[in-house]
Image 1: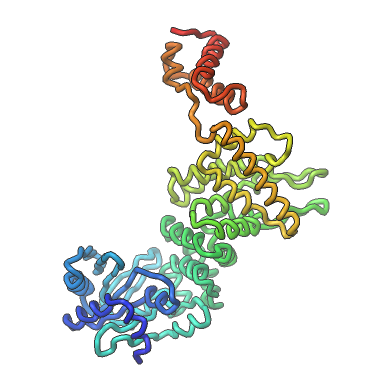
Image 2: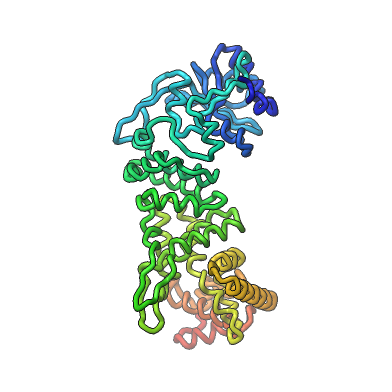
Length: 471
């Protein structure tokens, strides 16, 4: 059967691979994710090639044919990588694997194509297309992966209980593929995930977070999170999110389920942006609601201060989940801290000072903050949604007007800490920071303009109040 030749003919790279394989007399296949995506018509530049023999020798031959491009050889793993301008091709000799219960690192031996397909995680990733001239384009599908693709189903080739116990990261990958492709996870496969969920503890957090980020970047990430929740995987590494789930009632008063609200916000923001860290801000914006939840007989349930407590939780969560602790974390922390600030600004009595402070605090991330605020509207009442969205449009116009007039966004106070120290003859100390902050506050409150002479005069007055004068 050569029906799949048509999938290869559009790219010259496969003819080059065919010539190299035949010249070395190596039985060779393109296998796995690339074949899956080829059939699903999904864009992919990563090609996995498996041969019965030395993958490294095939890689070196291919690199020479492609114009002596560079080959990265990983002898310990028996693999090689060749990157061209358009492709990233990984070569490996067919192998079989066995596992020790306390590690997801397999014991690897040379094997047949059948052995290699047996070790694949899912049937849709075990498809292979022959590249040798005699069988060019022939599909090898021992586990009915094509049928599972038609049925939009994630299923393991062999016993799912063994598959997931051997390599627990495959459970995260099952959810990731389901979320990316919007496939179902087959019932026995899902039951095996639930059974083996605690095995995830032998997987490094970096690998877990890598799969989680891919779920977050899928088109409808809430689907992936629901699978993580119901499979018991989420509780293995993200207890703060599990704590959001559920509705408590007292005196007939309940609050919304903050887990499912968060997923709605995540989906809303995902329709507007491919920014992973803005999506993370959506995930964490209400993360402190459980520890701040209080009940008052008159006002009902409150979550006072959850935005500030949530911002303080962000570094701890990022650190534990091995996410970057630099600008990305600070960006998420800022948006979590500020996500309630635009709401009251719609009122007529709001001063320009409040608008200036938000402009200053949000800086270049103001537009992203407003996207998050809009995504946070999850009411089922269409009239309420329209009202809230209109309110945010009013707020955005107010902010625009104040910024055009006062230019306070990302501004730096015209008097630096160094100048304060030199004028008063001070060493670095608390007083220097206090004077600088008071100058900033006066500008934001509109008491003085962002002008050097006005700021310097205020500096002198503040010094006198603190009992210090020009040195």
